[in-house]
Length: 114
Length: 115
Image 1: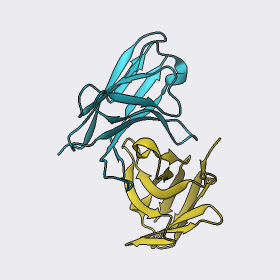
Image 2: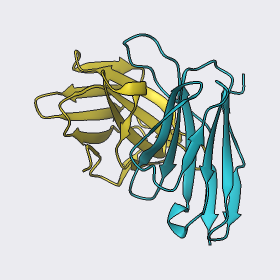
Image 3: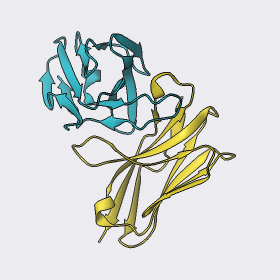
Image 4: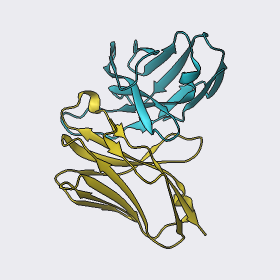
């Protein structure tokens, strides 16, 4: 079963506008959530994370929101820039998981048009 | 620091051939992981290791073996490659910091095609 789902395979926005990427999870044991960004022919790189004790975490143009009751998180990018065009993966971890293992979503391809 | 490196970058195999993918990290991380990425399926964990000499199965371990003889290296082996193992393979590592979660650092990937 897919415990972390990103239902939108792709998203296209105009430069300067807001990009909102969504992620849903089913495992109530998840207590830490991360977003990774991936450019073609490169490995994923860490972008931003949030603990389940918070509902918002901000880092520059990037903000992650967590709604625990809905088991939903979102990544907001404001303003969006062409260099933000990449695949974004949502990931989750449970505190008691051996080796700090992550469960990833399918990814969303973001395209920011100039 | 080079971070996480993977060898080779590309490889083409015939069905039934074997190969080993090498991952190396110079960050003194305790934990290491092997993932595969397939279209529409995100990253799926194959095997992982919580320390030198230890390995464990992930989500999709069948057809793969691993070894962690040295802390800095994590090897992924395919004994008899199948077309279903055509994928992009990523290695990652993370430190162990007693109780709190740590981000994983990824290598650049190995693109494997099995004909």
